[in-house]
Amino acid sequence: MSTHHLAQVNIAKCLAPLHHATMQGFINSADKMNAIADAQEGFIWRLKDEDKHSAVTVFKDETLIVNVSVWTHMEALFKYTYQTEHLEIYKRKNEWFSKIKMTHMAFWYIPKGQLPTLKEAKQRLDYRDKHGDTPYAFSFKSKFTLKDALNYELKI
Image 1: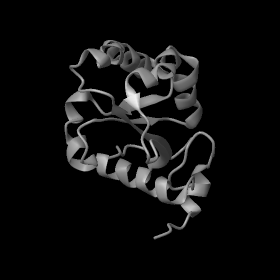
Image 2: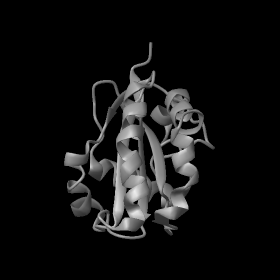
Image 3: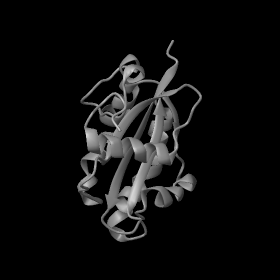
Image 4: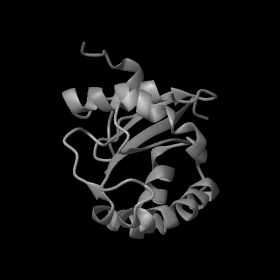
């Protein structure tokens, strides 16, 4: 039994304000995607919409959508991302979001019972942006283990 879970953050830059017609396809699918995530085996927690107003303070960009969640393991997150209806919405991302220069996704391990903060999520994104995939902040491409993460020395 693992002592840790997998946290993830992903960000996207909106093409228009959320109330704009351009964003309606995304807005109309958000509740459904959240419900699918919430029902997935391995899902633990996600940042709720009412908590996302703090993201503007941390990320200093009101055009960003910030998603933070916790999963029992990477396979559960992968299944949700690529093997549910979420994939169909993901394929349409260019309808609602523009390319961003910084890293848009990061995963890391957290002790069971702990929840990631927005500040921590931004630190992980910034670290991955600067250092690439490491056991401290990584993506699906680099399947670092908990052991890798616990033995990793941060580059400052």
